[in-house]
Length: 180
Image (cartoon, rainbow, N blue to C red; front, top):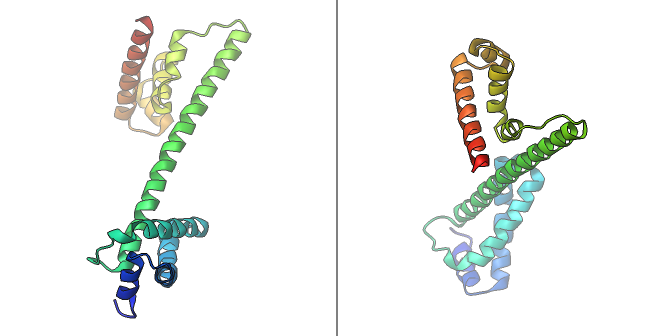
């Protein structure tokens, strides 16, 4: 690390704002280019680069020089990106669950508003994953064989059979919990 980088790091670790600003300004283009390639999204790369710089300023004292400063920045940026992707995945899962529950309530309301019976089984079916629910319905409500279900869902018949079995097990658990 030539060009005075070590000296700037030492000064930044001692709280020198000018040294910190110079250090971050010098490394920002490198970091941003890395994040563009990692995320394939310029606005996300910009946001992550800024978050990384903030984290760098907060953690400057923990930089110990065992790796290049640029490597340390990439490590911080990569972890921030991975954490963000995990959070998005959890949020997406939650949104899907909410949409499924809303759909179930809407269907129940339609049934009840037309004086049609909404059974506990339909309620329990609404808690199954889409893959399990479709397999159970095709097998036990519509009477298709596993080979036919496999063809319809474009899965092997063995997978269709295991989805039906898993779905039925979950239905039994749901219905047993309702009785308690």
